[in-house]
Length: 304
Ligand SMILES: Nc1ncnc2c1ncn2[C@@H]1O[C@H](COP(=O)(O)OP(=O)(O)OP(=O)(O)O)[C@@H](O)[C@H]1O
Image: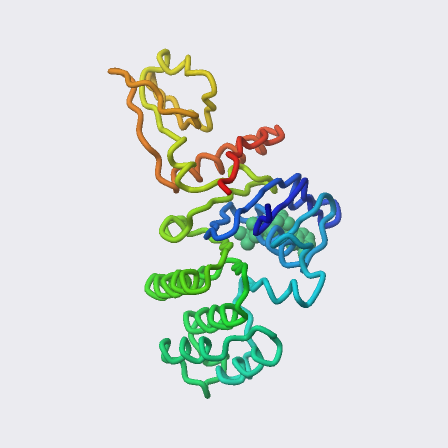
């Protein structure tokens, strides 16, 4: 089976600093993947490895079944938009489209021109004179017109206001529906990711903390609120991700294979994506702060 992105014991060090450690993930095709984690977690490093911009220090990575960046054919299957939506400031919108057509064998001119028209982008305007939102939209148009099978974005919406962000994400979803793409999107904006992503990878301290289909992850995580003693013994297979105690009451964030048994004294609540991600990031930060190595993630198998 071919995965959109498959990392096996993947690691990347910059000098003595380990930015990505023993990363094992299998991202199925056709997903919209949210890559989240705190600053310095290793997200850009992972995306750089996936695009062939960086070489692994250990392990291996394949993208669409091939080593990244090994051939022009492989490069044309992947679209990458780096963190600062790089464009040529002195080139106009029209010149960007003409350059895209020259450089990309599968360039879809009709689609690029139609999107530029829909976005009301002036073909004669230089990139330097576009707003942040317009630049992001142009970068998305160029990446989509390459007709890639995998589109990778490193924090595409970070600098955009909420309206521009919403418009960008809506356009991205239209592109996904039209082209049947796999998208990997890194962002700190969990509410945005919750709206568009159906697969999640949480990175922290250079390690994968959690990965899997959003639906499965949300269905297997709970918040338990109840007496400290009652919450001392949990069903087998339950993993406590985070525990908070106030007096005799405890609040636990757990990963459990099946819903916790109903009880009059213990309340079980579903988590939203943000609470779940924050619990894993908090656990990784505590483990690092206390000098432990982060525990192995309980990574649910991806759905193929
Ligand atoms: N070229 C480099 N040389 C040395 N260290 C680097 C280099 N690039 C990244 N790092 C370090 O590697 C770690 C991971 O960085 P990376 O940019 O991958 O994190 P990130 O999750 O993308 O962060 P952010 O959310 O802040 O963009 C950080 O500690 C960073 O300082």
